Image 1 (spheres, rainbow, N blue to C red):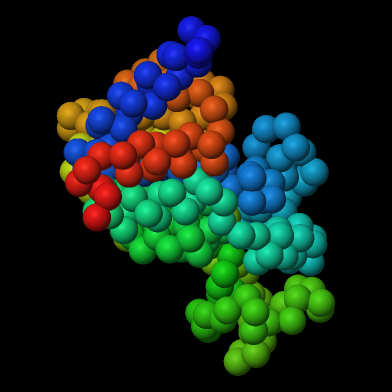
Image 2 (image 1 turned 90 degrees about the vertical axis):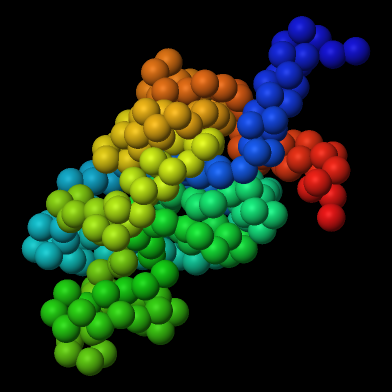
Amino acid sequence: MYSSRESQFFSGIRKAVDEIALGKVVVLTGSGISVPSGIMPFRGPGGLWEKYNPEEVAHIDNFKRNPLHSWTMLKEMVEVVESALPNAAHYSLARMEERGLVQSIITQNIDGLHQKAGSKAVIEFHGNTSKLLCLDCKASYSVKEINLDLLPPYCPACNGLLKPGAIFFGEPIPQNALWQAQASARQCRVMLIVGTSGAVEPVASLPYVAKEHGAYIIEINPEPSFLTPYATNRFLRGNAEVILPLILDSLYEKEWFAG
């Protein structure tokens, strides 16, 4: 027998599944989905910004003025990201995309774990750390091509300073990513929010764009976020690596998803 709280939880899962099963789902993910993969969040308890001052190490102007200081943090972050593996939440979303339910994933994360799990339609709102870009000649290198034992790293072609492909404070969101994300939010039938606080603009506005265009908003988070009281239609409290596989299993129970 389930307790009343457990019954309410599974009822919420079933209602979310009913919406997701109709398709046209766009997913919005934040750092919470990658924490089980060993990637520390930037904000909150245990976050990277408790250890480093973001204005000092992650603002583009300070990076250019003192790249060695920034790269001390960046090397640590890049090494963690490169060794990380997707978890059950990433794989569940990739499976939903493969079956035609998820149209795209808008992610604030810079770790590339959605792609490692098999997702194809990923809009990287803040870039990623898998590439290093030369600030002078604009050449691009895989992070695996560059020796990070000597910091800061410089471009093999022109000796210009290299920076990760992730977006720094003081840099604009890539226009193509912004346009794609806004278009996806306008066109989706369901927006599934996973592991984000909804505190950072302009990405925090996307659920409201989706809702204004008639989308049903499902949120998966351990605790209510800034979005919960205003944008969310269905809040599922818990960890994404637990809830998303439950949703996937429930989808498999439907006849049309079994093939």
